[in-house]
Length: 128
Image 1: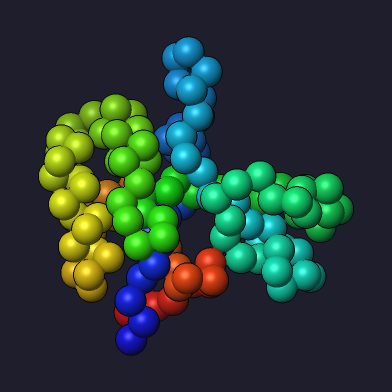
Image 2: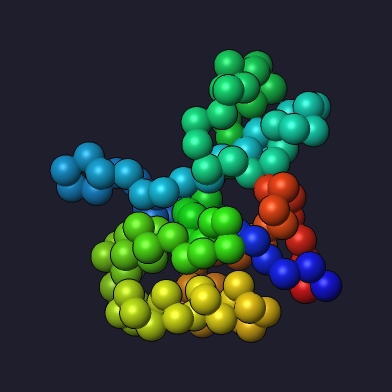
């Protein structure tokens, strides 16, 4: 079993979780061209990819970054806490993400919002 290097949350269909904030703020987002024929475009990347003009990657899949490079992404955790009513506080969410990086499951408050993806150090999905 591979230890997760990064944790992403792909919001459920119709979710507004990744929408801009009231002042135009954006959450930390990872993207991939999931329908692209180029294997390197199907890896999750946390920045605007250099392949963004690829005609096969016109509508990339997006996910909220909860952890990257083996560490919790506090901006993503606070974004989740601020956007979702009745979400546990940022400290509890961060604790859940840290435990998930160590092999435990994420809290149900997070997993009910969409699909959780665990990535290896190369941005490829892994399963437990």
